[in-house]
Length: 114
Image 1 (cartoon, rainbow, N blue to C red):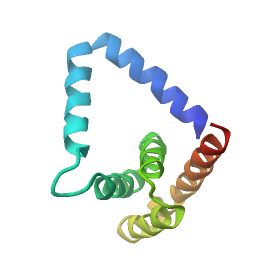
Image 2 (image 1 turned 120 degrees about the vertical axis):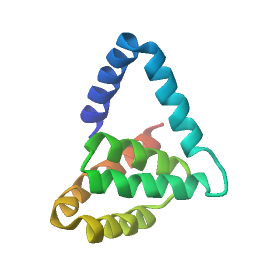
Image 3 (image 1 turned 45 degrees about the vertical axis):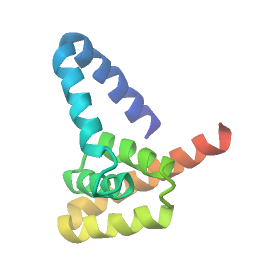
């Protein structure tokens, strides 16, 4: 999972260099969408994670698991959201729960070493 997130970071850097105005606008949009509001950051992160699983986006899964855990969301809460994504996305979404588990383990290693 870490290798995949590092690969995404490198690719994102290339996109940012190639299209700086678009990249800045995209980041601003993302920050606004995920900001604390009527719906909490915590809830938004869990929704984003469920969508990432359903969309089968390994990068998004890793990023949103990391963000969720930094907000204090537990492994159990994350796995419950994964269950809802499986319900909505069927077998294809279920196979990506392995990526959720890999991301949880990666973040737990990061937290214990740093």
